[in-house]
Image (cartoon, rainbow, N blue to C red; front, top):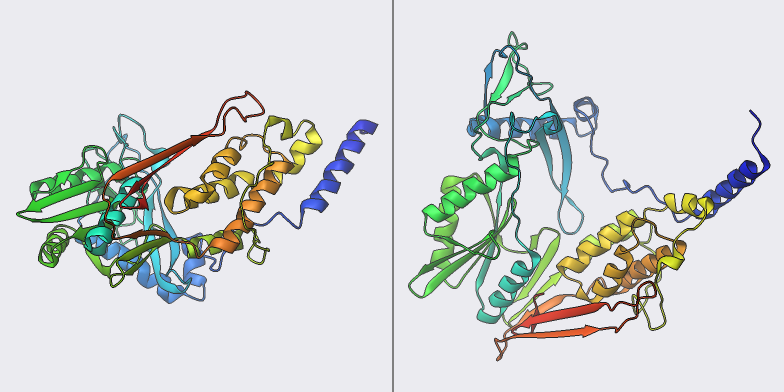
Length: 431
């Protein structure tokens, strides 16, 4: 079938834009370490012994937690599959910290009402984390960190769920058996919920009171002493005005869960914690995260900018692609991925990019080249400001102070206003 002249013109235009954009488009999976994607890759890689030891550690943890028992599969029952997932854990400086192997159930094959009921599980809000950091700096509290080694293996499982045996570790003569799960495991749809319910039960049993606004924050009072606990899935921050109460809380956690004591908090959920108790300051930074984002999108050597957006910058749907050629060229650009990376920095430690992050997020479904250029300007701004810290310090004023503003009908599409706000506690931004 012979293509029409219009079709040939369209194809030539698409090819042209592919070549023009080749320099800006990067493989979003580029990273310092190429982790194995399968069991066979792991055992044949240069780090095969490290990955094998990591898998042994994972199975020992499951055995210790009595996660499953090998049984004959009942008639009519269908087991879910499982898969080894490998991850090279890095420290804040990008150095290899450890090799982690996780056995994950293929939960996407589960049936609602049969294999699971509820799946919802809360996580701590970033506002809560910043409030705790402001209190730590102001009152000079102890701040430590712990990690739950096998968080999801602690949840009680109430449904009858069967899983195939892990690849490479089927006992001889028992290859036909399946794992009947007694505890939740990674990959199950209800795993995170069951872990949270178990953690919540233990904390309340030992005198901790859950915060009604953020259900992943707990407080325990003992006379004039107190301990604050913030949980983000399996990362736990503990703040207290008493070293004895802090250690008591650690012992409580260690006696109920398999914990790793990380000492004084320095790095949590991608956020670096820099503390100078002598001067009474505490800073939150995402320098390592920003460096990874810049490298991921081939912007690690870009020239820095002094501002992410300037007066006169205009955004609207009139900049969105109108023709198939324009839409095709934008499909080659990882716009949504970059904007998502920017938004995480904004949500955690960079309120200075809140306006532009929110503005660029409006056009994720159909971004244009002007939106992409604005996104790269934000990356260039982060390049020059990656050392910035969200700083908290001792203050004479412990009041919560809020500011708000608006650009007064500046939207080019519907003439609506874009508003913004910031709240400070003891002089430090919390929301």
